[in-house]
Image 1: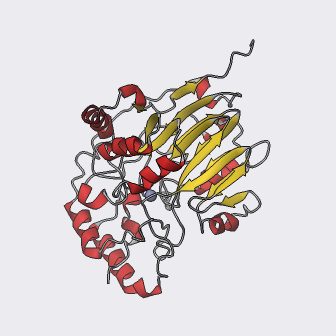
Image 2 (image 1 turned 120 degrees about the vertical axis):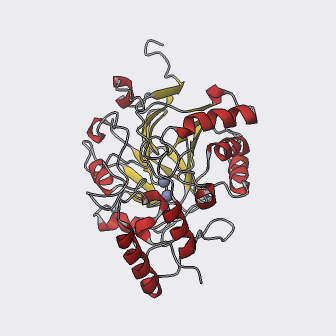
Length: 361
Ligand code: ZN
Ligand code: ZN
């Protein structure tokens, strides 16, 4: 019977610098205590659950080549007032904060995806993947956030300090939209009335935005024994004639999930698609798209334009922090996608897809 992936070595947090002895002890403990874990409650759309046997985890951990991931890379960070301005009516723009955190301005409504403003993507303050590219601005500089989209509960996507800071923002808390089963985590933090759960393919109107949950191919877990206990999801937000898709964290699979999303939402203006944390492919393929798959996913959706996310911020896999830049360029060339249609931004950079009408008009 396959053994659940021990939490201390999960791909999203695998750069914990435990020595091999510690890793072995934890792996053994996880294997011994496997009987305490609940069977996973949620699965991918085809019923599959990403469940790597222990021998694969060990093979990956011990065969890791960190030389690329550890190579110092300095990515530019933009610090411009535009990045923290609130949304104007008629506007569609996106500011990349880093990793999967994007501030979307959607016709007067400020939406943020997977807010992660902490130093580490980890349950521990002293260990775990550390931010390699500085934040362009602190969370306190954000405009008033109306809507927060959470894709799943991995530490690089669901950050307790960032959630609590948003809950305490001046002017009142935002609405948090979460996948099935994740509301309990918010309730434990004392966040109740403003958390909404949406199941795949369901839709709710929240903060004046149509919010739909759509499938992703991934998994969940924050501890040793909660694997698959909450769901993972992508989101489509619609307002003012604009539609934006946020993939969350996902593998590509056979692409059928994304073709279906494109059929359901045939006029996506912008798609936020992960392009990082993809090496080695034999280990990462099921859970993270590489740039070539990201471009294929974009084409499956039929979206007008895409922004690459989930890269350049936390070194979560074996490729270099800046590897997605060249890999995405090659993927665009080989699949005939224009550079302007699948972009990467600098941290803190804002992409204005539709400027607000001039105030004088
Ligand atoms: Zn994840
Ligand atoms: Zn992730």
